[in-house]
Length: 252
Image (cartoon, rainbow, N blue to C red; front, side):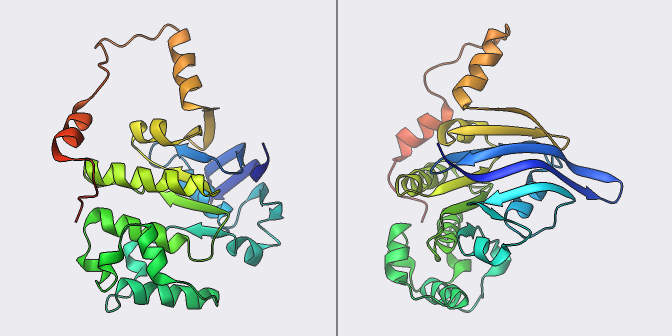
């Protein structure tokens, strides 16, 4: 497997506080890589350095073989970063917004096709504020794809969504991986990380304390003698909700 992101001995300090403390890891091409940890663990600083949005204190970071210090523009052309709500012009509809963002990249796009890819065809004429939570997140993903990036970064993409909308977004993320895109995701939902991620790095206090596949991380815990007090059933309450209310796209 070829690494598309290489992080070596990365350190980020804010005054006397060390947010990222000498971490190293690789992200492979066409994998979904999860960066997990509590608030303040250093996840956001790490991602912003990789995305060329923040300077590092020391260490080396390469994206597709390009150094983040010397090739920022080239890196920005091959990555997609999920925008927050404040990044959208309130008076433009979805199709117009995609055209505006495409203009920033100086490229031509088929906005209708992009909306179709994220199941928002019927909302092309709607404004962002008129969308449901799930629709907003799917549109946010669409904006990361404008420049046809090799890598996209999704920061807690399903926070606040109902179970159906979460599952719909999971399907979209899997679809992106199948198309050849590498995805780096942060989430506080452990079931989401387990369902989506090929590998996971768990970060705490600025250090990576575990890195492996979700299955291997669980197996390592069990091998250490861990036992759940409550017996795990083959389904959970979220599965009940999805089954009863329908699995089709219904977050409108």
